Image (cartoon, rainbow, N blue to C red; front, top):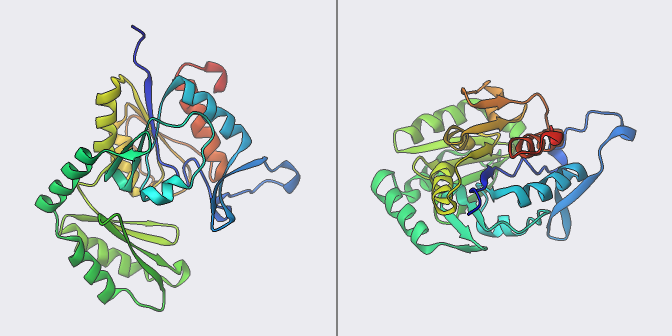
Length: 275
């Protein structure tokens, strides 16, 4: 029997794929990398990676169990068209759904929802608090994702920093956590984690080595659960200079960081020339 493959679990938005606003193309225009659009929404291009990153991801799909690991809902994830082999496993809704060949595993989802009911304040209580305290001056949308967690779409420049801190304290006492990512404020139950779902995929695949990457507070548990992890030079984790013994903090920001992360993945999987 061949040795088990490596498991590579990576966040997507602002880790491997980037909106036009998050690309951070700081070089002269003539030296900007060629970009590949990997997501279209309402007939408009939405997310990109460099063409070099796309080639690395295609190679990675042949070397490892690549597992997209995202806070996106299933519907939001399924409009992404990543290069390379279609992943056998994907993790959506921050671990609430484990997709196997594109279909949510019902037993996994049932186990997750049962744990949330036992350990956290109900989603309705959190929604009510957000409705009551978030100012319509800076809130653009109230959203619930997969009946698992809530998030707001906000005008970032108008958002009071103190309000976010107060929300985090309120949520903490109820078993929830808060994450600010771009124009979105997430309120997520603490037991709803990417790491738990990744451990389940590792169990099913028999992988002996897990690699991970992510940029936000919601990725911290994923990075800590991996044998090796990388975070870009932007995002919530970079802002607080978060690190851990097996984590590499990369200097690159924006879409260049996504390419660097994929180089690190392929190198760690046994392609020294990719470094």
